[in-house]
Length: 65
Image (cartoon, rainbow, N blue to C red):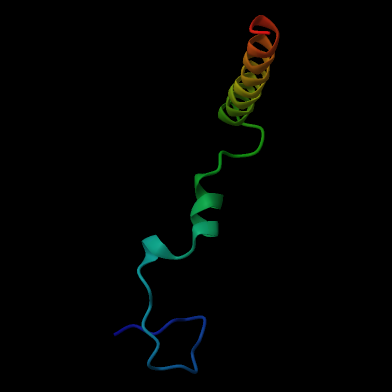
């Protein structure tokens, strides 16, 4: 039985598994590093998808009166 190093005064606290610490920690670990090519590519893909969706909605709005 291992105790949590963050809480040395609680001898009955059991360490949770490392893979389910927190969704925020997992999100920070999965995020691409600042200034990487993958991050720029992801931003470009998201922007292109948003622009394509707006253009598609506008095309439907004007093409089908």
